[in-house]
Length: 256
Length: 256
DNA sequence: GTGTGTGAAGCGATTCACAGCA
DNA sequence: TGCTGTGAATCGCTTCACACAC
Image (cartoon, rainbow over all chains, first blue to last red; front, side):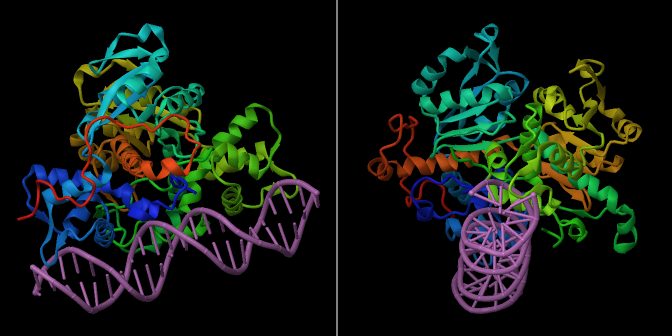
């Protein structure tokens, strides 16, 4: 039940695997870069390298969207940009609210990556009355009291929680009650939400702990690895190291 | 995996599945909370609920660590905290450097979750000379020129990149050259690293895009769901603006 | 009775390898 | 000839269901 299971097997209707969805933004970014350099077409091999995945996976991913390539040639960059954008729902405008304007909230408000992809910061909300009216990233911070009104007035369906852990669930409840159905949670807490609401979490400390695990293991292997693989040498073989990234390894959605 | 190999086969030695490793921090957090409330033991069912996973998965995960539970009773909280901490390598101190002290870097520096889990911010590094010496979260920012010296002097093996995308690869190269073997990347770029270096990425914009995909799908289902399930609290919510083409229509950009 | 630990079944994602088309 | 698109094989994770220990 890792995925946003609404009551229907409606997931089947369009049937794009979750793992593929998680990679589409990656392809989109690589394609956008190519587009800006006016590259007209790209092969699965090239694009895969740019996105940091292998080409078989990329071709399989694209096959779920349709047959958008040309055999013997590759993919049309502009066309693919459009198709992926449409598939991800980025051809429409998504108003987003950010709740909790501390360091992190401010960083998010200033993050250029939002605006450039169909996301618009509709409002910044904080519980501290002293923050009210203060502009962050050019947007005046509003008090938590306004939360429900803001959500409704702007038709916001995506909320970002950047509050301390203690406040997160309460904020979440209010967001959901006001109509938000997708939440990006930066607070280190497990949020409980009703069915039909998607939660994705980003947890800085968890990422570091996963790195620590691997780091620890490297240290332990050091001696064994030295003799094991002849190819080694202090040389640094440069590979477009694949698989940088979570997605999928942490449950994106949780039940009530 | 571009080269056909992401981890060395040594992963077999201890053989904890990657998916399990990714959940251990989650369990650890839940257990820590229980520990602070002086709860002595916990069942897989309870702990699973607190961590937001199902109990079968949790038991399977723990079985990879060993048989640390007691049948008919549950798990000893303190003991489990220790075992998981050890497994993750958190019983030792991990000095970390953060490169790029903008909004996000500052947020990370201030993030309490680091210090509390065996991570110590050894240094903050920024390319802007004007930042040098300015304290952030009580730690003076140092200039990029010092990067190599800092890494070596402090025996840093984990680096956090919070620079703009354009600078990330270069910073990464220098970190790796200086001895860093684990990188947490917040810049929206695919980093290329030599074999043996782990990279995890956190990409805010990608998370939002994944949410947008699901959100879009919900909107499409709305009509079907409306009659099906009467439970929904607030009425159907809609973003204003665009009506995305009911798939099938091929707009503006097309290949020649 | 209660709740863990785990083989076995189920399922989704990745990879392989090649047919098919430009 | 070159590269896409995809069935088939494979791999790894999740879930089931129950034996077993307390």
